[in-house]
Image (cartoon, rainbow, N blue to C red):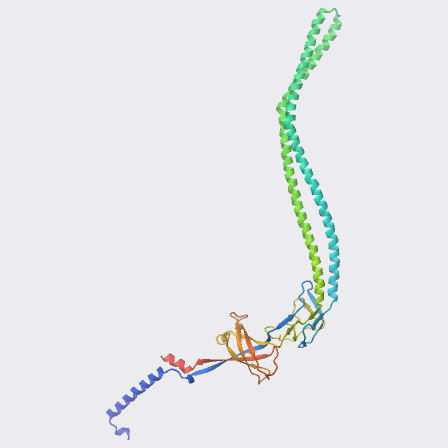
Length: 425
């Protein structure tokens, strides 16, 4: 039936009813949950390297010997047994160092013996010096005590005694003169004789008077000046003796401590030389390095399970340092996968997550893995350390450490149309 034959009112009503039904159906469709077909799987691919769980780095690891020259080294990639020789070093330089150390030790022993003898002499001399210092102080104390207890009083008494003696002498000669004069008046001696005797007596009186004057002056000076001066000098001498005694003891103690420190340091130095020689002889045994396990030898150091980009430089005649890794022995029995994980994959690659492992060398190789650990902080830039446990099945190709592989992690995410619907809401 042609639309033109339908009345306009009926046609308009049908169109309105259709719009209402369409809107109702659309709203109901939006409220319905997403079906399984709306969830799409997402595959995250990361690269890894096969790593041996058990590995050992081989180096001389010596303290006294700082460098070696390689005499021989097993070829890169050789399969070795535990205890098998891996690296041989030249011994000429080592033996020369040992010989020089032995000579140095003998000279050091002679020097130490001389120092020990000098130290004993020093100790004995210090004993004598200490005794001399004690004696000096003791003598000064004795002199002071003698002066205070005896000499000071004796000096005062001597001054007074000398003064009194001079007075007595003057008195005696004066009495003698007086008696002579009296006697000469009574006796019949000649006038000339009297004059001579009297003259001599008068001179004696004058001499006694002079001596008395001197005695008075000397006595006064002794009591007022000499005795106090002597007392002050004795006190000063005693004080200086005490200071000298303290200074001597201080210097003796300081000198002894210095000598003890010096001789102790020399003894320690000699012991260090003995230890150095013993270590050299022990390190002499490391001129041949052996394998600690059964495994495969790789020249140099493996960095996170990988070989360096450049080939090995170790060969006969090469020089290496004592701490330099010359070789790495890995055991292929137990393997794992080491991954340099980008920050953007942290949400997918988590501890416990499973993945499929595909070897670069074998197209038909497939294994499964489980993430053992993921570092919480990057080791460089935005790279995180990740370790994946590897589960292999039988009858698969033999894989070895340092081989590369690819890991696929499968996750799910909602479809794009679902996001659009959320935006519309």
